[in-house]
Length: 500
Ligand code: BES
Ligand code: MN
Ligand code: ZN
Image (tube, rainbow, N blue to C red; front, side, top):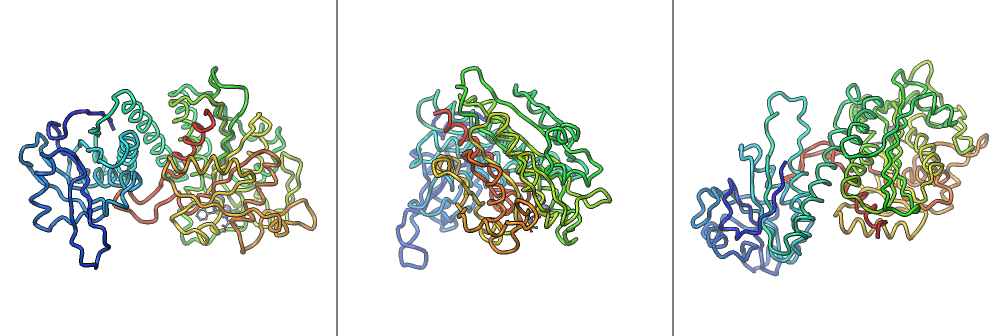
């Protein structure tokens, strides 16, 4: 999808479709006597006038995500005018704007309209608006329809953002948002692929292809190196599968970056999670193809970082393998020695994500990472705790968490911090080894994080549990059902924050 910046007067923009946000300025909530006072969020009188008639008819309420398409709007160059309800003026932020850009794209796609021009609304700083519109348009443009012969040609080809302000700054914001949007969609594409078409080997190939395109170093190691590094926890999971595992390392080491900090991004790359010998029920097991969404998020983030070029070193480590039951598979009760030397009693082979991450975190530290972030579809328990709205974030260091919180403000993604009190450690004590790999049912997201904490050791670390948010269970007006690409935007902002 092409992205274009226009500083023209909206009425003068020659486009298939001009999109404008309409807001309800009335203060009181619905139900109260106050009548809606709907107006277009633009200073362009011609656009407001073109929208006025349909607004006056009462057909347009300004309700959030309402979309109304007008043909041949009078006194505008555009062929069509799309009115997008943004809700109440006082509640309208860049988060609503991002979603509205997705709504616009998803409204126009099935109607065969291939391009649009979106007016940056008054009331949101221009650079922020450009970023939200472009980012939201990419989110809306993605459909997981690769394997559907009937829907292949449906995409929007070009989005123009009509804004006012400093051209160079706005262009930079637009270019960066395009890079991040494309990268988030790469992550979604990887997560969407079924496990027969996204083996650890294929994931590694896709990572290397991306690396070549953007000028990153990519190394891929197989079973031999995993054993040589004494990654007993990672290998314990991989040993049960006929598909070879892949340890993927992506390096962004710009010459102008200081020697430290080195940011380490560690991703869970389980290309299919059957549960292993502790096998999962058949119902819903097909969804476990996206158990590599954390790894895919790291690949997407690295793609964006390579192009945005913050002055900070970043290394991604993705531990990719299937989790399969077989005659070679690890069994409950087995003890594995992790790369760090810690012994792990395997209570449940379905708690495999923390095993591959334990060695991934240890390896990232060995590679010189001074700050660690991992992302993983780690636990069903985080879905019980936070549902599908917020992802979980854990931190062993308040400064790291604060940096991440600041990144969230910029990315607009929703994460909620969960605790890591020492008391939880009791649940992962083993009678025969240093630690067990499952803390049982209660506080499952926390005990999984406590397990990882043991392998981050004294390195500042953040853990993102995206099990509930990496996959949209239902379509929304701004996003298709399927992989969400969660964490990519925040990881990019986080890396930028480290560059000062
Ligand atoms: N990949 C799953 C977690 C998951 C659940 C991801 C739902 C996406 C949606 C993970 O490997 C797993 O199986 N976790 C177990 C841990 C338990 C055995 C301690 C779980 O959450 O049930
Ligand atoms: Mn599992
Ligand atoms: Zn898993």
